Length: 358
Image (cartoon, rainbow, N blue to C red):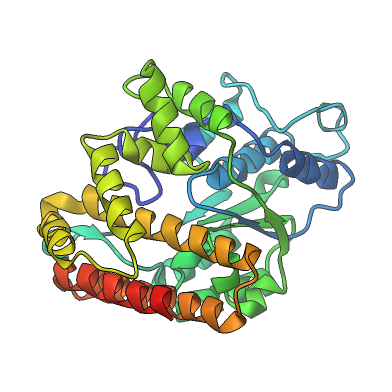
């Protein structure tokens, strides 16, 4: 079910793929789905949840799955809820159609909005306090229609400080029968006062088989590519979103080139890095830049896990954490101030080399 809305691009949609609210199939995470369903049928559904885990593994799909189920079955004591084995709602159900088209009065989506005034227009880099205030006003105006008010935040990592504090106030003083579902790629970066008021539900990476099945389920142009999908899924480490990114153009070859440069650390092939950075400059290379950033994340994650397993001293691990924080800051400044991406790439390799050689 794919029903793209007219209007600007959606920051929480991977271009060319169904939005999570349109995705009825769900792969993996059976225990997490069961936990949510059990809490609801026992009328013990926490008011706010952080659904955490790596990007692209189905967190937003699960959040919309919950919202769809509550819209279809607002009474937890109903036979449909008590006898349910999952949160699935048939595609032909009115709740599914309303969710897919965002034709809703009581379900709210908080995400990075489109900045038409930017040159060129693009999404804001953060969820702003004005976005939260707009949702807050609508949230209190909504009748609930005897059912639920549901707010999906996708993703909580994007909230700036003021926006996070405004959301906290809404979570603390909500109308009756309100539910907040916060999608978070890094739950530890969510405001501590928000975390303390949420029940945490952590999702792990999908298996390669689950990732392949999820991609095949998206239909054309993603499905039917056999070994190509399997290879991309193997590189993507359980992320459907990353698998789709790697299936685009020459992304697999580019990802492999980045991996070779990272594997040579702490020795830096500066000629190779400069050539790589040249490929990331310009507004037409956003996909390559995204591939580069995801490759950095995978490299850092793998190195930290290896060092932890091998009993590396804490100072070594702290060096990697500091390098990743500095790289994130560089990336954010590059995006916010439209800095040269080449300088960001060179700075990233410099920091990684220092962490590796410590």
